[in-house]
Image 1 (cartoon, rainbow, N blue to C red):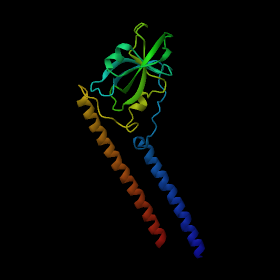
Image 2 (cartoon, rainbow, N blue to C red; image 1 turned 45 degrees about the vertical axis):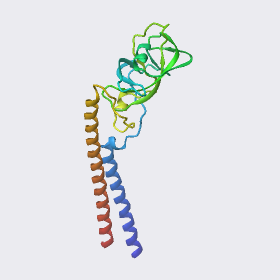
Image 3 (cartoon, rainbow, N blue to C red; image 1 turned 180 degrees about the horizontal axis):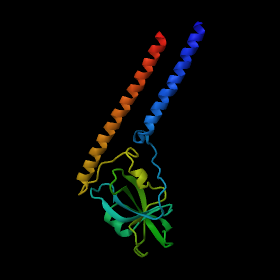
Image 4 (cartoon, helix red, strand yellow; image 1 turned 90 degrees about the vertical axis):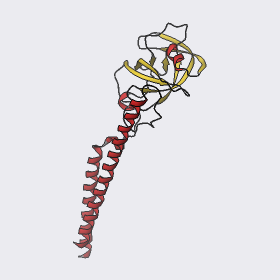
Length: 215
């Protein structure tokens, strides 16, 4: 009789645990911001024009690239010489490299510049080595082309995808400050909700255990 009673209690606990886990997973699915860890780019339309900013190490003022391209299938990122010069980044010599853009035009490059870039409206920055279109080549019709592994807006603008670095100085500093404040408020809200949900699950589990013990 005692063995049968213990078996019924164990079975009840298994059902309760399953129900509690299902409840938690349902709540978790409604809060993807709390559990999002992927930083890979999601599918994006080919040859999409995007606005990005680039900033070199040691510089305070970012350079706007209003006519950058994403999704061209390029294995390397390339930047126009005028924008590379404007960034005031350290330009390094590199072996001759040829890069073809989405129109089929091929550009030669014998130098690179390492910059951090971010989307207009974004707070996450990403390191990238840009190949510089040589001066001997005609000035391209774009400011830069991001390589095919570069983050797309759909992933780059998700909170917690990457560590948020200091906001660049200049005219955008106030906007960056306000955005970070809103993001911090949302983070605290979700953290509070997660703690409250965890507390409710623990309380429900403890209550069911107590009823089973005295049942």
